[in-house]
Image 1 (cartoon, helix red, strand yellow):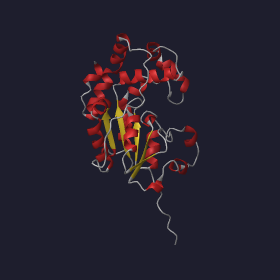
Image 2 (image 1 turned 135 degrees about the vertical axis):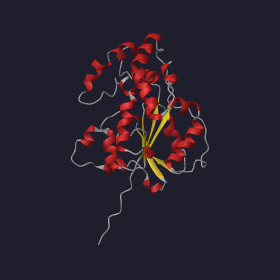
Image 3 (image 1 turned 30 degrees about the vertical axis):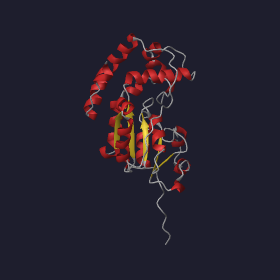
Image 4 (image 1 turned 90 degrees about the horizontal axis):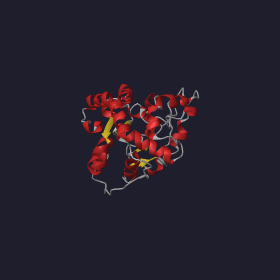
Length: 253
């Protein structure tokens, strides 16, 4: 009788949020001797609608993007849109129900502005920020029946629904939520927490601070736009505080 060897699967994902420090975290994890990361950041597998429109999913295409021959203890990748992209959650669960997931959540107001600044920089959006967020519902309809990948500045900041979705599929022990503002100011200690969560040696690592993707600011957020978004997110922030037992009062200032 021939026994088929179990296929090597990915152990963890950094799934969000966009403009939440995932590039820095991806960089740091690549420096650890026990971690094998994907060949590039943002492999965009579980949000690939063309791939998942097929009756049979070819996971080998995804797994070929990892160097399993390097015999690292764990393997993972970073694609920030996984948290936001609704179908991704179930797809990840169907791929590996035992996977671990890391999400960094940022103040939704500053996240939205940073997202707009990036898209403006890329010439993907030339509308002013105030116009973009006030007309977001109308503008994002262009992406239907899916979510809009570019204009979703405020929508991505409604974290409670996204958290709830992942909690529905995965046990709490598989999920790690990190507050961006804590990660930004205390990266060394937060990395130790992440290494412990992933089950690797937190002491086998020499931390050196690295600044990743610092972009030119094309504008500053106006007090009017800031107040508009704070009022929009006020109830949402309270929901996140309850769900994660966090203090997010700084997000509403």
